[in-house]
Length: 350
Image 1 (cartoon, rainbow, N blue to C red):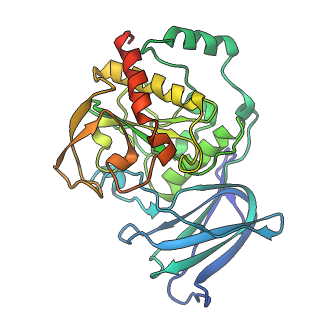
Image 2: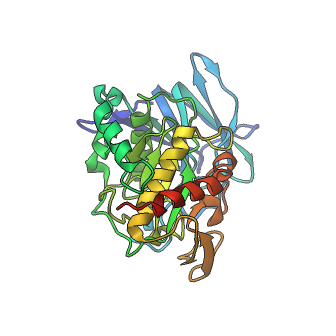
Image 3: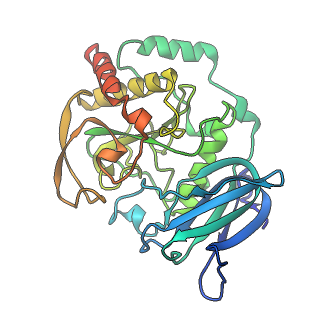
């Protein structure tokens, strides 16, 4: 399988259909093996009306096959009924495999979903991936925000290499901000500083081209080095509607930690970045970080449409949806994050 790129883009990708009429399945449930150009990210997608399938995959690196790992369903996404959800597909978490040239998929139980596809992405590399904010600019921004709810330093879409041609339509905006939802991206914990832009580019392409969303799902992403990255287009100061918390996107902002917080604890720098970002967004909205708020669900897999739910102003994705996100080790830090964000909020700022 050859991976293909759009003109002028460093990102290459391919999608391959598995299963379906006339396609054989091996006795152990293996649905197929795909050999391809080198890829760094892999996921599975399927038709939106299908239930979450019980699938697993493995990849080949340097001639050796790795272990089978579950293809866990992705619980982020636009709310049903919203225009962004109209053509959306369902899919698995996007796995970072760094450099592989083949993938196998097998069914563990149940049946294979209709429309099953394997998504392979090579996010490419750019000279700018090693670039960073000037040290003086970063220090000045952090000093300005120290102890108060001022805007923290952040890296815009151009720095991670967003191809704006992949976005569909203009950004949508929330009428008000009531909550900050925390997520984790699950895909990798050992990435380098220079690999972060590539990871975000891969997620962006997966969300827009494979899942059919209008943009990357998260408003902001925070890496393990404590750097904040702007996700969705529309401006970090604006109330941009994301596609991160099914049923609760309409009054919230989504912050995703790049990594799997079930198996790794968030770094000190990551937690501090979350505190700074949450305090700043909530101060601008006049919402206290350590409080709770009544929110009306637009329909999630946990709370039906129209149901009012009392939730923490800063919560984890699992508080609103049937998911382990944002991972147990990040979820355990939520009380600390709320306290620290509230202290910043109390000292004033924007």
